[in-house]
Image 1: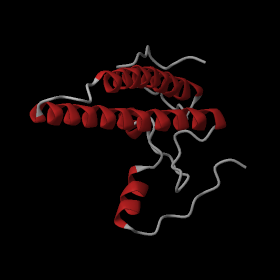
Image 2: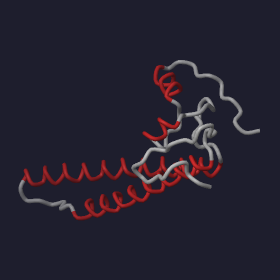
Image 3: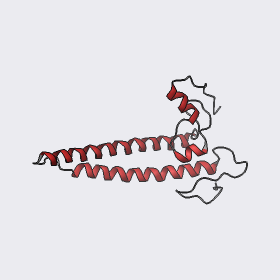
Image 4: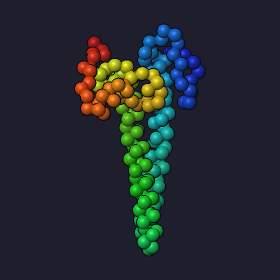
Length: 146
C-alpha cells in the first residue's frame, strides 16, 4: 500500500490519475490524519482535565470567584468540545475498519476528498448536509456493499 505522493499531516492527498475513490492509499492517508488528530485531542483533553482540577473553587473576593467560575466554565466547555471531537474521530476510524469511510451515512454517496480533507471525520456529503439542515427529503440510500 503506497501513497500517491509523499504525505504528512499538513499535506493534501494527491490522487494518481485514474485512482478509484477510497483507494488503499487514500484510506491509509485519512487513517493517519485521524490518528494524528486523535493523539492531539487526547493531549488537549488531559490538559483540560488538569486545568479543571487546579482551578481554585473558593475565592474570598467576589470578583475573584467570578473570574474563577468563568475560567472553570471555559475549561469544562473546552473539555466537552475536545471529547466530542475525539468521539467523532473514533467513529471515523471505525468506519475505516468496516469499509464505509468516505461515504455519506444518509445517502451512501461519496463525501468527496476535498470535504474529507477539511473535516476527516465528516459523515455526510455537502449536498446531504444542506438538504438535512433545510429539512428537505433526502435521496434514498444506495446499497454500498453487497
